[in-house]
Length: 508
Image (cartoon, rainbow, N blue to C red; front, top):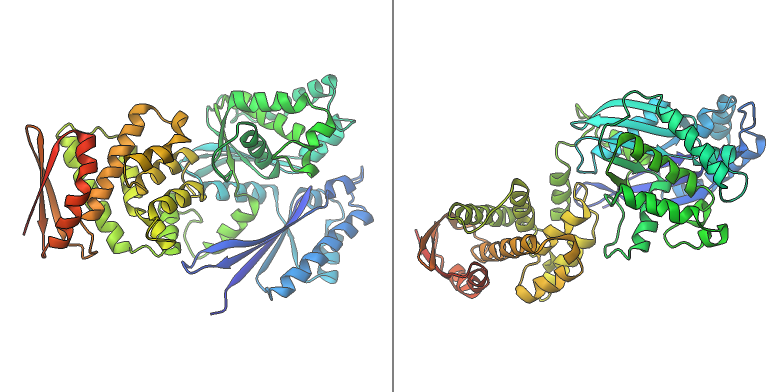
């Protein structure tokens, strides 16, 4: 079957990027190609805000090279959008005409609102935050939005970005103390013009290349054990410490910093100063990175154009449905295991043997729905594959710590494997939390064995506590002997954790 493809060209002030999305077997479009060119169009804007002939030439040359790629892939659905550098150019009409005459593309210049709105759409459709403030700092503009209950409330676009701040305040490759002071004062005064910003105490969500580089630098610095930066979080003091560390370096050393793109070495400090200043003003304790940005916002709008709202009802459910399709999970079986797991934990909680929060019930649902996912790769070592896949795959709507919780539960095999998987992340959780995750993992394994033949025969589960014995009464609608054999093998894990003997009574 011929794959359906869709492309977006994002003409930014610093970089120009071509992203191709391909429809996969779940019906979802996922990124299949990502081509970047560092054009720095902002540097070709003259004092009268005319984009120079040389700058237009750089733009046309870049688009011509992208054209070779889009023609190779026989792409027809291509959106080509431009942001601040072209928006601020007085000769924008002439630039649009040149692009139309000399390339395959029709360029659309995004308004300040559209640029901010697309960033907001990217965040609410791929992250877990119901409220927050987004910042997307490009080369020539900085967009801020404030959203509450996943609805856009405020937006603003400032006509400065990492490139223009560098040009305006920093003469050399790195700032002097006096230049840094002037830059900080300028940023504070600019942000104070927004009366909806100060003291909001919301997380600051960074979008774009500079925010991504900050996250990558910090991950390398702390020897972070997970891959991926989407939904990576830093505390305010960590942003400040990383900023101080970068400011203290000579330019040659800055260019060699792990996680920092060499082409951003001269503009990373102005960008991080924007994040630091905003966190102070907002009184934000958390900086979160969204790998999804303007391009994804454009994409979400296109993909949801037939819907009433371009916002997914539930980001996590969308993500786990995609996982189920990608790894050929039997959804009926997964739902049955989830229902059995929930019945068991509720019974244990009612008897005072387990204490769960609302969030814990969510982990039970997610962990049980993904249990044994790794059998897609190899049934013999499915537990190890399950843990690795869930821990290292970007899952929209889940923070990194939450991914590990789900991975620990969904991959549960025995005490030793649980401890090995948790060892790298022990500092992330208390001993009590790990004990709880361990018990829930054993419950999920127990529930999975109750549907060993995937016939979905369990209708109800009741628990009675008799001194040192737990008696599970399992109501079934068909013969249960294959399940009974598996349950007797697996119940020992739960017995050790609950420190009680378990008897399983099957009946019709």
